[in-house]
Length: 421
Image 1: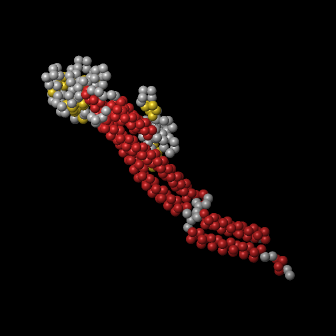
Image 2: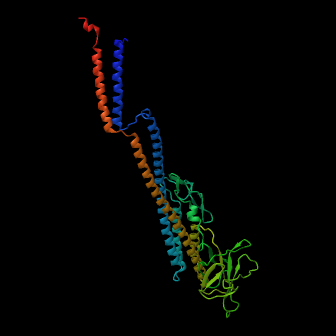
Image 3: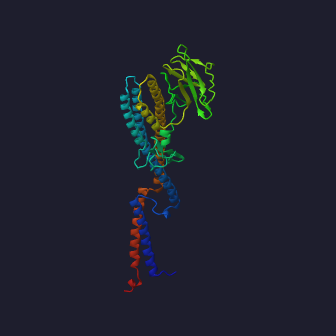
């Protein structure tokens, strides 16, 4: 077999180049700290790394979503805290207005403050988050949720939807509450039924009877006759010397047939402050009603908090000049207290749900952090370089390169002409 001088030259150069390539790769590994520089270095590990990095990026997105949800929910919690403080102040004002020492003028002063509080409440309901989106507009983040209407109330232009953010595998959390849930879907009265004084301006009550908000005894049985909701409590006194009695009939009943009371009778004898019970309702009337005075007891309905405050302002701005008018005022204030209590309870319920979501997010964030740590450790074990092994390999490759270079020099000096001297 003949080996030419050119073949020797080529083999020597290729050997040096191979050693240089290996040395260069090792140097790049040491510089980057990574074992795998190209997919061809370890195809199986490269595939595993792609899956691990996808998992890592997904979990990081979960954390970003959790941070965004925390920001919005924390802002909402702060707003709801301010709303609670505001409603507590209005409740204090209502108790102050019910004081017998108040005059028409002082009640108007109180009404002025309540009106200011109403405007403040609307401002809170239209609060924006850090991104300029309305907190209580549902999924319509850039639509102002509460706008005044011609009737003196407020219309809701948001929707009833909640926006959910993915904060973990199979776990989502709502980043807010629609304004309808917070400020509108509030049952008036005691939450089951409403007690009201006769509201007929042409034939108001003439006595001084004041009804309380009532309570449920067992299970309240609502009445709906001829499309009219509720019951009518009517007081009867044919002659001044007769005892005051009362009867209850379904409001829509054209015959006004008395229903059976809880004690089995259809007509009860009125005693100031003694409970009146029928069909699951337990109410109390104080003062002295006169013949023909009526009160209504009807099933609770939804009433927004803005309407509740607006009604209270009108109540305080109405002049009171007679004992019966004062009783009417006290009845309306009593109704307001029941309604504002329901509003405050609803706000507290929403606040509790916000707090529960914040706690859930905190827990999920810890889970995500653990998952990120584990994923990072696995990526490191697959991808990171063993420096001790790499340095040892670098030394060997440098020695190999030097040997290849020295060998090339020796071989290059061989020639038959060296012996022809």
